[in-house]
Image 1 (tube, rainbow, N blue to C red):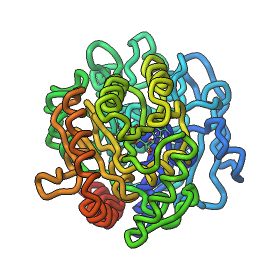
Image 2: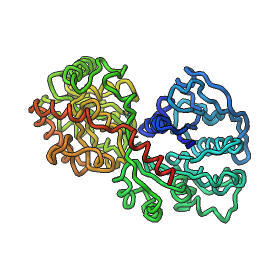
Image 3: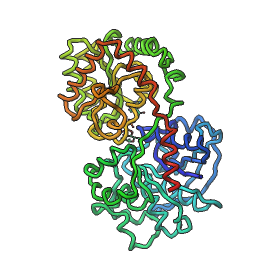
Length: 468
Ligand code: ADP
Ligand code: GLC
């Protein structure tokens, strides 16, 4: 089966969050199952682009309203990612350093989708499935089914994976003229809330819809940033498939970013070496339990509460715990997390910014990872933490609920019900108590490192869905 994944992110080419991790891994695992999965994404000005060799497979123009932009599509020559990677270069729109966050993101991702379809429309053969990830590629199912230019492709099945329904990419009807011509009687397939809403359109037009965990599929029928009714209406074609992790990239035994590699047998000495290194760099006490938060500093992750949660925990524990935060996002939260560094030198530190290698080191070094998310469609951090012997403290929501069982229920993590300062504070207290029982901690570490969250199972579940 030939599967084309369309995405705005793909690790290690360009990653902002978990979307990048998923699209960098799922195609590889699908290829291992004997299929041909490829990734098509924008060519940003990233390190990856400059460090690899490419061949041009398409040279043309893309029309966006009244403007034409030059397009070049590059194929990475070595196939080192485990799948064919195609980068869509559009001068003046996509060739920038960041993935998102520009005023013309609507134009950028529209041009990307149209250019990619124009290219596929010229192929001599046709792929078996087109798999779109999130709203940046959400207009593809509509365009394939409705635009005159792609009429000959309209029998290709499309799948939409919703990684996060909070972000929908909506824009005004005044930009309708950007889209290639279609029968205007079908305009309602683009509409949600009097806007052109790419995520809503994909939910309507894709042949199948998936969410990245079963619990999230349930939750979006009552919490999906305005799309609840639509999702309820399309429930019949929707499935929840829990993400996996790339156990080759996230392998504590072979991870080149760690101070010392380790496995379940050597976990105690391995984690100690990594913790010693992190504590030395960040001026923390290596004898005390190390708590961490890694992630985007946004409301969905409960990041606005972190400064108060940390302040209370550090104050109440009287210097008995250490905390290190790694993240970027809301500038106000960033400032407050930085300020705490001056209040609790020696037991708290923060790295504000994005740092892939440091994230690996912290997963390996920490004793506990906090995920007090308000919304968590899947969450990968908790699965990376498990594999690196770090005990997750999570809110029971979305994918966190599907992956972590509380020790009180015979499980291996610490769960709380609400994203509140009190709930998380209480959970930290439970973690501290647990830490005092080192025998139990050692048992849990060995157990969680052996849990299997590899993509093997989910990659097959997607294939079953395509076959359906
Ligand atoms: P989301 O996609 O909502 O951000 P996930 O848990 O699915 O959440 O994935 C987050 C991914 O991004 C993980 O690989 C995590 O390690 C990584 N990450 C988040 N923030 C940072 C950061 N500041 N530095 C390095 N890696 C980060
Ligand atoms: C989104 C979600 C996150 C999920 C990731 C990968 O960014 O916020 O929960 O793990 O996508 O599917």
